[in-house]
Image (tube, rainbow over all chains, first blue to last red; front, side):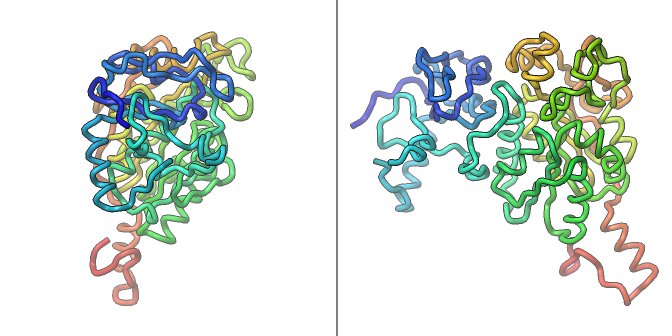
Length: 95
Length: 304
């Protein structure tokens, strides 16, 4: 199963680690992040990729995040990593 | 999948289930201790993020690196990094690091602590480590206050700021930390804020690679005890203010880099000089006096 890829990259998020400090949302150069409507377990609004077509996967959010909850990655880099993992045979299915 | 595993897994936005990626800093952090204790909006986490990225960039053996912290909010850093780390008594992070470096000269030693810990209670140790020019790196996170003990004024609190023990506004003079350590003899002194993450990462890389006493001062917001008490908003407001407030001046005269909330905040690399290092000097002097009776310390196959 594959999902249609939008933009040049995407973000990965551990929403339970987020403390809602807004560093990623305010520093995102393309303004593609926004606070979520719902809460996480601790009661904070976490960021969501509201405009995925604008995300470049630049990882500025990952550099700013004080809680190590978010990072960005380009599709190109992800494919490269995936190929490396498949070659090395280290990757296990995460299901 | 247990609840804990669920928490530790990253969820991609708009990615296929087979696509997974790992955060590059995860390898350097103790995941079992996350999430950390710092307040929402605190900048210390960002400095740790930059430090982890600097270690990634340097590509050094993590078994050969030790991080020493004192007491305080920033003192917790040692507990979150997956390297040899020590949480020492208040203000004594640098003496501990000195001992560590002298006992094992191969090791890269980084002192990671706050302004209250390093400049107030450990101020003398900071000066003397800089004077000796021992090869350690100090990362000083300056948040203008004592965060963990309840917002008492620190030697770095700017004029007019309200603190628990300064209810009518700070009226004491502040430490100018770059001037202090540069005068004592540090070979690398830089100051950045948590807004300049890329520069900060590069400065940390340079400071770790530099031989001799190097210091990176990082300005970081304390939303709970400094900003709220002074009605300066949330952590992100201070980070945005850093963007406006900070003026980059590499090689600026350290006399002019004192911090005041009315003047621009001068950031950049202030000092980058060469000066004889402590262990080299010790080897030179002792081999001169003792000759063949002395074996060079910390030297293997003629190389340090």
